[in-house]
Length: 232
Image (cartoon, rainbow, N blue to C red; front, top):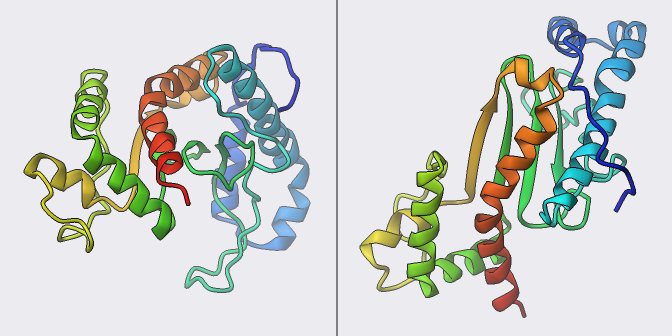
């Protein structure tokens, strides 16, 4: 993990949003080359500083997630080879914070800097089929713990995203209690929170995202336990 003090991250400069908004309307390499210094000064370098500061803050709260600025942040360039949308650049900046510090570990904290609405999210995003099966088995084998977790999160004002769900109980899962059906049909277990621009541009951003991560740690831990229990 990157060694850094829990220094005060000042928040993102509003010029980061101005750059991303302009990039949205200027999706071409010539424009980007002419404005690359703005990207470096207001988006890329601050995102790296944010990753370091948030990692230190998470460690201080004993949340086992961190982000390596070189491995956990997404590139501004898009791979449009297999996409109908052919614009060459992302119109937002984002990164993942995981137990390994890169983007290849289950159970994540996600941050997105976006002029259309910045946000933070945590949970299990589109897990691969083997992991998905283990997570579902964990819910089925521990119904009381799962239902208690759902209630606890709801009391804190959080709700799982049910927009990506199966129409039926997944194959291989029999005798599923009615109260667990909704959870088992999910293709991922994610909770999102919008971040107002005034928070993103202030020195309270790190505190805000850290508090969210602390609140969502029980969901992440539930999943980690299931993945480890059914490994092999």
